[in-house]
Amino acid sequence: MAAPHDVKIGVIGGTGLYKLDHLEIVDEIYPDTPWGKPSSKIVIISTHTGLKIAFLARHGEGHIYNPSEIPSRANIAALKYIGVQVIIAFSAVGSLREEIKPRDFVLPVQVIDRTKGIRPHTFFENGIAGHASFADPFNEKLGKIIASHASALDNATLHLNKTLVCMEGPAFSTRAESNLYRSWGCDVINMSCLPEAKLAREAEIAYQMVCMSTDYDCWKTDIEVVTVDTVIQNLRANGENAKKLLVAVLGDVETAIKQDGFKDVRGPMKYAVITDRGMWTEDAKKRLEYLLPGYYT
Ligand SMILES: CSC[C@H]1O[C@H](OP(=O)(O)O)[C@H](O)[C@@H]1O
Ligand SMILES: Nc1ncnc2[nH]cnc12
Image (cartoon, rainbow, N blue to C red):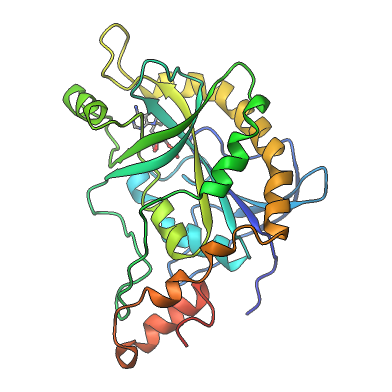
């Protein structure tokens, strides 16, 4: 069945960014994917230039899912199904560096996976094994476009080329863990980048996470350790800046899509399957037809 929309830009809102209330809503859809329903309805929004974007609240309306419970496969599959080629994903993060102050923004270029294997994290299982390349987890072109609009932020610095560590949660880190991540060269920490970014790669969607610093986690001994309260206080300011940054970047992202600037993202998954062709199960082929039509028929 054909998707009800063809929207090329997806936006995933994290903690504190549950809607884009300054833009016009034109529709809401709630696709049933082979991996279930997404976290929330996908809201189709029209910008003041008439560009349509798809917004999805990662933790659901009312923040009902903890990070380990987020139906990331359904989220990514649903966005892909409606035509999304590019995802800008917002996330509240703890800062592991003095110079990344609460309310600053960060564009990571690398991520370290400290989730515990309890989250469903691949589309390639149960009948088709496949392996995506993930050396550079974020899309460089998209990152550069976003970086070029740093001046859209009010009273906040955009830090570039940083390393994110994604932990399981939901409890925050111990001080020993926080210091360990610092010693590994990590700059910011969250609980939501993975498997989202890996699944976007498998779905052949260009993906960049935009991190919004809310706290200094617990490594810094001269201030209070992170609590939900600290995160929420800083999120109010971050949310406004997130919307400003988003509005600023959309035009350039649209132009890049029109010029087929993300074409490198499409294609690799055709050759990522290692299971013998004759062994692909009908179920697996049907599931993957939803995600990557024509690849495994
Ligand atoms: C409420 S603090 C921990 C929570 O905040 C971040 O969420 P998101 O990435 O969706 O903005 C972090 O990853 C944790 O899930
Ligand atoms: N300190 C922290 N650790 C993990 N996720 C976070 N999200 C916001 N602050 C965080």
